[in-house]
Image 1 (tube, rainbow, N blue to C red):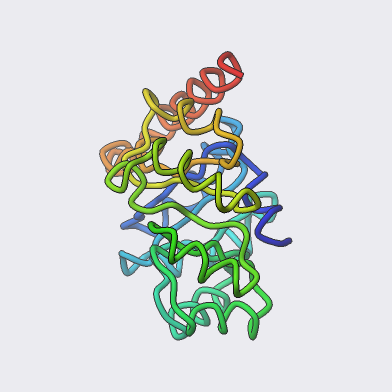
Image 2: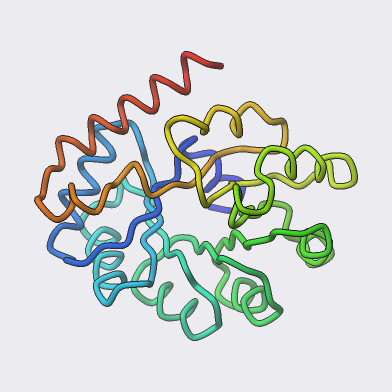
Length: 210
């Protein structure tokens, strides 16, 4: 799997901060039933790495990766726990080198033209625009398309059911990340059916507007 493959699995990339690793398999099943075949489990919580490990071992039909990875140590730890890909909120040489060293797809976070150039000059053509809406959202992506037509984005940050199609219709956007698809309250009360419903609703919404 490479970065292009990762960003073509699903138009929605769930950004998940999981507090209880015991919920990992039920959550993976709920997302798959809703038509979402990958998970970005952030390393913001202590349960994140364990959740990645459980899904990687027990639910191979789900593509599972790590988010909020900012350095080589975090990258290696994620890969050691079974992460198939890595998302970062930013860009630096250390994390790009780790991707090459560990032979694991990396979707870098970029927010400016200079950062896009830095990514492209290091061979990365698939990046996350973050924080998407805070740095101009659709307008910024349209502006970046002119000088950087080969770059493809997964905008994340401020994406929700109401604006996701505004992003997905752009020629330089392959998918969009969001936390709304896995509400923390639904995880807290283990309402996995609601998560499946949100996925089904969003996928139908996307398809009906394409």
